[in-house]
Amino acid sequence: ARQFTRPLNDLANQFNTFLSAVAGAERVFEVLEEEEEAGDEQRAVELKTVKGEIEFSGVFFSYEQDVQTLSGIDLRVSPGQTLALVGPTGAGKSTVVQLLSRFYEPSGGQIRVDGQDICRIKRHSLRQHMGFVLQDTFLFQDTIRENIRYGKLEASDEEVEQAARLANAHAFIMKLPKQYDTVLSQDGGGISQGQKQLLSIARAILADPSILILDEATSSIDTITEIKIQEALYRLMKGRTNIVIAHRLNTIRRADQIIVLEDGKIIERGTHESLLRQRGFYHGLYDSKSSRSKKGQLG
Ligand code: ATP
Image 1 (tube, rainbow, N blue to C red):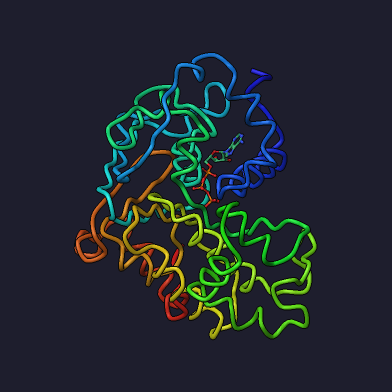
Image 2 (cartoon, rainbow, N blue to C red):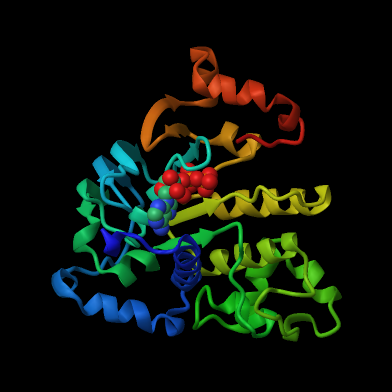
């Protein structure tokens, strides 16, 4: 069982590193390249274009022997649609996303992108079509310009700036003494949490992926920045298939489909309205958070 147990922090870090790389920063990914060479990966195919249809059929997964993390997950997201994943902590929301990006392989069932089983798609190719905006933005010790450019290494300075404008990041960048040449420390010291998120949105806009994975921030951010983030996010999400680990009521309401996970199982699914009508778990979640929902928070 030892091979299954790894310190959570370690994995969280790896996941973070991996996720930042998928935004186009292949140069930090030697580790994953080694992985690519292993086994079936050689025979896997590259995807030139992706429409963004996602399907899970009967997906099972365990991090540790005898502990079922996901049990029989079935879901389907059409190209251009938004799926919100909600549920209590530890329900398996992040795991769904990690499997979709082939950070782990399911122990049973199949995950398909555009009808193709993802275990037959090369990891780097799959990830090329995915963008990630996460709670903890991964920043490199480099200039703001280069940090955004990680979304698309061959992008021109004009493209970087255009992406920053669309992400509502341009204005704050221009107020910094060195503007786009401002060097960020690895933890992004000097800019706020919300500004870091705007940079990660800019990076994702530049990457222009068909599939977007969003792990919504739970930390409180001042209202004005929050509005900028929301606006930039909707701009980013438009026309893509979005999988959102959602905490904000606004985002959840707007989703085409909501899936409620608990203990690795889908316990409810539907739209905001239909789930409220069911008066089940979602309704309870909504109700119990109603004080927080005034701030737009859920879950
Ligand atoms: P949260 O809302 O807290 O982020 P989540 O719904 O995203 O939770 P997951 O992170 O997918 O839940 O975790 C599902 C289960 O798997 C939890 O019980 C968690 O402790 C466990 N788990 C997650 N990552 C690992 C890991 N790397 N090794 C072992 N167990 C893990």
